[in-house]
Image (cartoon, rainbow, N blue to C red; front, side, top):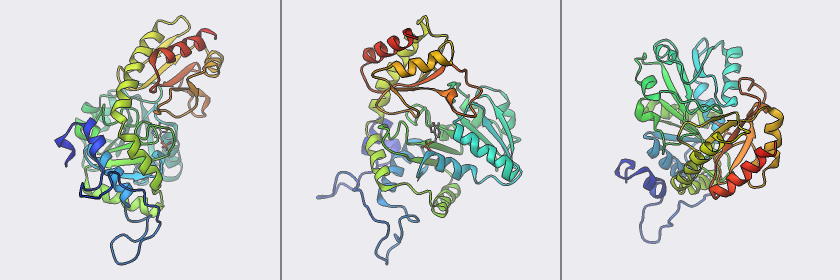
Length: 352
Ligand code: PLP
C-alpha cells in the first residue's frame, strides 16, 4: 500500500509491517544482529538497512512524502545534512532554533568559514535569501519562542538549483505540517520527541524526495556510523502507531492550557501558535519560573518534550540561549487529563 491511498492517521498504524501472508508476524520483528551470513546484499548492520530501520523509515517517509533515513539521534540527522555544506557556504539559520543545531553552525563558522546569518522565523528576508544563500535552515514553530515561518512562501521563492531549504519538523510532526509537499528539500526530525512519544529512546531522521540526496544521506550514515539502534527503531515505530491519538489529545489540551494561562494573574505572556503540543509562557522572572518548575506534582521538571507525560523547563538555563526571556517556561503537553494538569500548573504558578 502507498501512503497517499490512506489518511496519515491510518498510515501510522498500517505502515512498516511485514507482508500479511499466513504465519507472518504482525509486527516487524526486532532483529538483534550486527552481521549477516555472507551471500546476500545484507552484510553488516552499520552499512545495510536492517528490517527494523526499513520499517520505521517506510512509516516516516510515507508520512512526509519522501524517503526517510533513520539516524542514531536527531542531532546525527542534522549533522549529516549540515555536514554537506562546503567551505565558504552561506547558511541562513532561524535565530530561535534548537541549540544543538546552532552549535554545529557555529563550529562550521570556525572550521569551514561558513557565513552564518540568523533570521527570525517571521523575517521577510528569508524570501530574498532563497536566491542568495546555499542553505536555509528553518525550524517552525521555532524553539522555544514558537514563531511560525511562512514555509509555503519560503519554499516557493525562486532559488538556484544548489540552494537547499531544510525544515526541522520535530515540533509540528508530519501530521500537522508536511514541508516536502510545500517544496522543501529535506525535513529533519528528532524522533526522540513526538514520533517516539514515550521519552524512552533517542532517534533521528532526515527525509527527502531527491534520490541523489537520499543515497548521500545513507552513505554519510554508514561512513560516520551514526546508525540507529534496532531497539530504538522498533520502539519508535511502536510509538508512532499512536502518534495521531496522542497528538489529538495533547494538542487539544495545549490549546486549552494556553487560554487558561493567558488569564492567569502570575503569567506575563503566553506563546502558542494555535497548533501543536508545546506552549511557552513567561513568569515575572527566572526565580519565579524555577520555583514553579520545582513545585509541580504531576508535571515533570525535565528537558526534552513530546512524551506522553506533560513536562516543563525554564529554557534560558541552557548556555547560548540568551535571547530567551529569563522567566520563560516551555511546557510540553502530554496525555494526562486536562483538568489534572491545569490544577497542578495553576497551583505551582500561583505559589510563586
Ligand atoms: N531538533 C529539535 C527541534 C529538538 O528539540 C532536538 C532535541 O531536543 C533536536 C533537533 C535534536 O534531537 P536529539 O535530541 O534526538 O538528538
